[in-house]
Image (cartoon, rainbow, N blue to C red; front, side, top):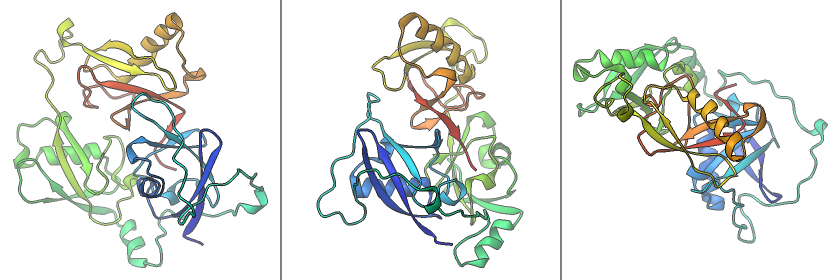
Length: 310
């Protein structure tokens, strides 16, 4: 099996370009290549493949991406407008722009993926099959990292419970703990198993503390509300909506759709959109507090559906 494949990126305006990708790179690694070659900031890149958002932590080989697959590259600025990348300097070295040519199904190889396969290093695949991992955890009050052992099938939430039980975290509730892979700078989601983050070797995990809930806790007083600004994709609208910190993100949909009927701004049909806060997709079954949303924060909509792994 070839580990290097060519992937085609389609940008608005009929522009295409190709990038050579290693199957064992992450989506974040691919974005870094595009930033280096075409000067498009990583924070503005969104990959949509078959109508679904590809998250940064995914390895290419865990997705359906094949040689000469086409990925839609959305480039978002602060006002949510798509831009085409600047033309490449002649002559191109690492990639090139070209007119789109139809792909023939017969030319696309059928590849069987083995999620345990790693390039020519048997010890890596053996480690991936181990049932446990030892995380090297950096806590806010500790100078050194602390080793915590977990089952690979444990969820991030269960790892948080172990961290909260450590003497350096006494008195800190689990719902204030946020975990981040040190190498990826991405928050880990509570309901996802540790093995889903493709941890091969003992990972370094950083602990951050979310701000406590305002005084009054679960008492839903008017002063306890948050005002968030929702930016529907491909519009110039900024819709202000009031929510409670402990509301789940799902309450945004009926509020937003009711306002859409009144104001007539664009929303895709069939609920085919999701919410993004600070460049991260939001889990609609989790609260605004869980996502670290503060009063006045901006939440964007993005067309399509979220894929967490394949």
